Image (cartoon, rainbow, N blue to C red; front, side):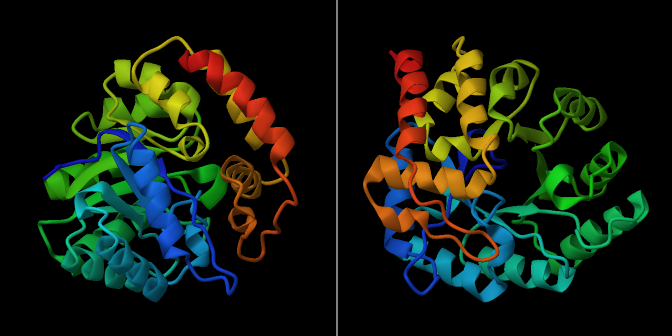
Length: 294
C-alpha cells in the first residue's frame, strides 16, 4: 500500500443530487473516468469538492458508498479539516476503520491570529487522539482561502515528531518559493502542489506530484504537465479561464456540465450560486487542451 500520495491525484468536484446530497453514482463514475485518463487517485471534500460544506457524517457515508462502488481505498484521500479538531479526529478514526489512510488536514481556520505553536498543537492533538500508525496525514497549506498559513518550521517539526504518520504536505499557495521553502525545511515530506502551472518544475525539484482541481476538466493537460511536457503556457491559460471568473468552483462545475452534457453538475451548495451555462468556457478550454496533447 502506498506510503504517501505521489503522482497525479485529482481534487475532485462533488456532484449533487436534487436534494443537495452527494450523488454517489456520478461521483464514482467521475473517479473511474479520471482513472482511465491516467489519474492515480482522487481526494474528496477538499477545496474543489466544496469540502467545508459537508459534515463528518456526510463524508463518512460518501466514503462507504464509494468503496461499495468499487473505488479502492488506496486511491482515495479525504479532506479532514474542520474548525473543531474533534470533528477531524472523529472523521479520521472512522475512515481509517474503512481502510483509508490519506487524510488532508487544514489548520483550524476560524481564528486567524493563532501562533505557529498553536497551529502545531492543533495538528498534534488530532494525531495523538487518533493514535493510529496507519494514518498518513497531509498538511494542507492554502492560506489565501483558509486564512491560516502553515509555517515551514511547523511542517518540519511535525514530521520529526511523528515520522511517516505525517506523510506529506499539499502546497496550494500558488507561490513556488513557498514550495521550495517547504522542501528545504522538511525534505522528507512528500510535497504535492495544487497550482497546476508549477507541476513540472515542482516534480523536477523533488516534489511528489500534484493534487489539483483543473484535472476534473482537463486531465490530459495536467497529465502532460506531470509527464514533463512543455505545456506550461497552455496550462496557465486554461487556469485563467477558471480562476478569473467570479467563482472557481461554480465555473469548474459549469464546464463539467458542458463537457458531459449533464446539467446536474451545475449544482452547488449555498452560499455558492450555480452558473447557468459553461458551453462558451468549454470551447475556450478545448482550444488549449487539444493542441497540447496532440
